[in-house]
Image (tube, rainbow, N blue to C red; front, side, top):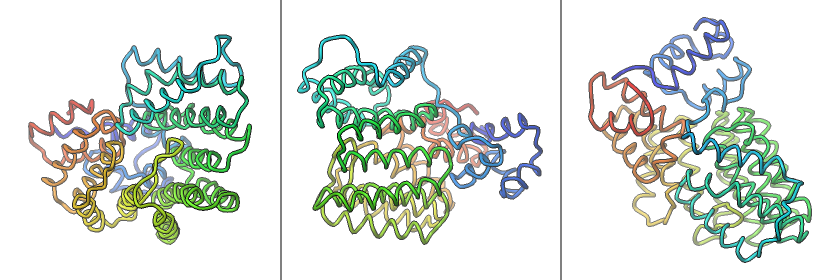
Length: 389
């Protein structure tokens, strides 16, 4: 054990493909030569901020730097079906219109799969569901139909972002915004804007994403009232704090954190609306992640302990992020045993998401490199994540 896993190996591969030395890439990216060397060797994490800087230097997107997640051959066929369904956004199927009540049942299944971080299940169901909802939305031409279509595109974006299918990461939010605008619904539009800002996040354009968020917050607060207003603004501020954290802008991050907590005060428990989750527990998970991005690992551990003491009812798709961010913080603090324990929890609660999550893979590869000797549990995690070494 101790080879550079995909993070460092990917940087080496791309750097050499661009004909650059470590010194040249360091100069272009602003990442120090010593840090870049450690990242390539697998002794330091490739953080989102450093990854974005390297991607800009190589003139590629952040998602392209991380690379697409591997999928099975049979899933590749489903992915092509999904791309076809997205491409035919304005060409409804000729089959009879489906009962909207049945579509609602299928959408509820998608929500459950997303909460469970069941990526394979989502890919299996989304191509057919998108085709059917597209047909229904065009035929019914109703606010309900267009809102349902926007929700499905939100799920397509979420799945694409997990795998870094950058074509769909770019296109799905545009289709989502198009559907939301057919018969305007301010809450649906706010969710679409949040996902569009996610495109900027995945491409490494954090400033652009923050602009999208701020514009959408103004629009939502001007068009909505009560809990819908708080939900729309709050979920946008969650995206804003992530963008600001990855940018390393502490002032901007704190602005979004404060605004998100203010919105969360309207909810005793998290709400699930239009494929989005918002409330006090989900806000806490985003704050925890942002504190890690801002280089405050002790605060991450404190918040993780606080979440563990409270019965927040977080779904697996959020718990895996808590455990992964905690593992990252523990690694920064030199607590290798704690890091390993948190990683095991991440891969246990949501194995499919942990397997493809850049941060969980980064923490794992660095932990493997630092151990310098065989560790059976790390070997098992590496095998589960598809890492070699």
